[in-house]
Length: 338
Image (cartoon, rainbow, N blue to C red):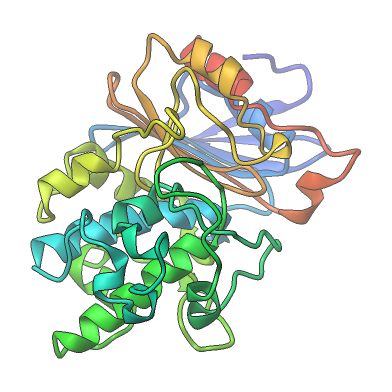
């Protein structure tokens, strides 16, 4: 690792990097320094590497820290696949069932009546979606989105599908006589049990939790969640769990709420740093799946190497500015794998 910019002071289990730009604490310092520098130069506030539950590396550039929680933006979306797997195990739903089984107002629509829960979470439901940053539609507003394509035909990166799933969960839980808050269910069913609770979770004007964004996590808790996924998702329906990592013809690089880094991936937006062609080539020999959010929030699972990698950043809006250093997943992965 290059050390021309900083002096290093060693301590018990940690290295303090002192420099003009920031003060950083690296714990269990390993061979990931170049990847950490790449992250820190792009608003990074945390980089954590774990293997089979053992911490290999942590880096917290200012203003980060192990106790600091950061918004995951669309990294939140990947919790919905886990929620569906838990709900299927509890007999609340089947991902192959039509959403209209619960959303009775969809039954008369020739396209909406054929949309399954899997279509919603795989982003190929065919619905027209709004992309306003930070403002997903309310649950009932999302349900009114028109269907403009046949289910399964087109990948459309939109928050609308996940808000609709939130309404489906709300109605399913209420019908089962349970509290109808989807996040309360997810915490009790999975996140609190694995000691990976969110620090906060944003809600809309309707009081319902955002499903496509809004979860706030410390790096360590997000990594614990990633380790649970890496280990096979104990306690949820396994068929649904594995469906999270099954691609569709509409997008070979997207499963059911998770990104699959492989050839053919269709990214969410040119500004997101997820270049399907470049990532597909770089990841051909690796088995990497990813939760990703605006501002370059990342949870990577290197499933062949059994590595869990968390990367978080501050100032999400600044990442879209013309002067911002751009994040490229293929560049970061290359540094991680070298």
